[in-house]
Length: 129
Image 1 (cartoon, rainbow, N blue to C red):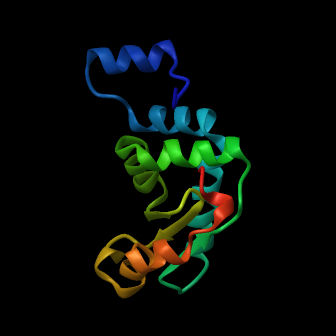
Image 2: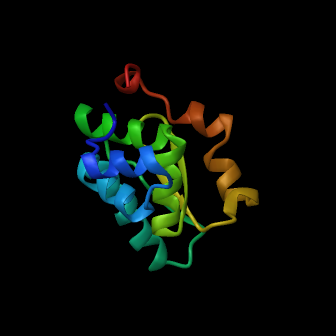
Image 3: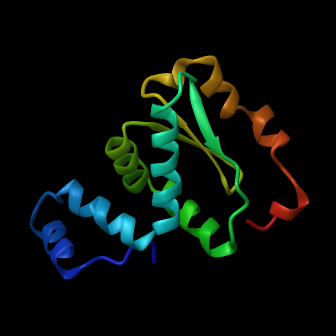
């Protein structure tokens, strides 16, 4: 299961629109490592003039699972992007990049998400992630 959904949030979902702040709080408490990675990257990006920042820390299996769940879900990923004002990119099972919104057409984003970069970021240790 990706998220620990409260009865109140489930009721919101069953009766109409979900409050995104409530959803983000659920993501924060359910996937704390993933949330912290994105929060840290957004803070780092705001403090730099660079096009992007990235986290290439090798997480534990549990932390890696949180990243995979957060970034593989369009709803979770999109909410994190809106909440933190970034565009996220993901390579392998642990390298997360945070870009300024609109960067998808730029060279840095295209390189980060390229087939070439995916291949260069492979290693036997990450084979089963």
